[in-house]
Image (cartoon, rainbow, N blue to C red; front, side, top):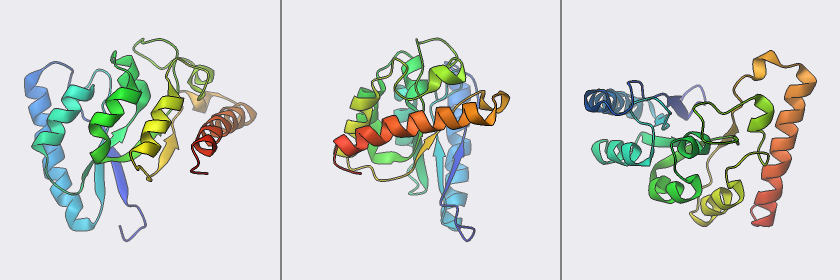
Amino acid sequence: SALGIPIVNVGPGGKSDIPEDLENSIAKLKKMSEKAEGYGVTLCVKAHIGSAIYNTPTTLYAMSKIDSKAFGIDMDPSHIYRSGENPEESLLKVLPRIRHIHIRDCKGRTSGPGTPFMQICGRGDINLVAFCKNLVDGGYSGPVCLEIIGALQLSLPEVVLIASESYGYLNAIFKQLGVR
């Protein structure tokens, strides 16, 4: 925290649907959260397709096992959507522990989020309007970070277009909800 970094996001590791991997992931997260607490930092994990924590039930299970104040959830609606859930509904179940949002859109419920242009907020299938409304109604006021996979292969103007369109879309939603 002395560096001005209040949140550290980590992946869960392990493989989906392997109970030992889930327990090992939770044990590591618990230990790291206790360490983070001593540094005044919040450690966040996000549900990640293919990993031990990959959907809302596994996230809730981890939340039930890790009681550190320094443990939080990094909510990524695209991973929740691709796990077969509706993120605007799943969000409500984990909202009390959300400390960070990774956001992007995606087309379909395939294993990957698609090309960078398919990840632009508002172009995909995720109901980001309802997701953002539930964030606001739930009192979330933390960081929201745009995450686009594959952007490093694009030109600077293409990256700026993706960021600008996503920002404009999300900003319009938050203005409509009265928080901008």
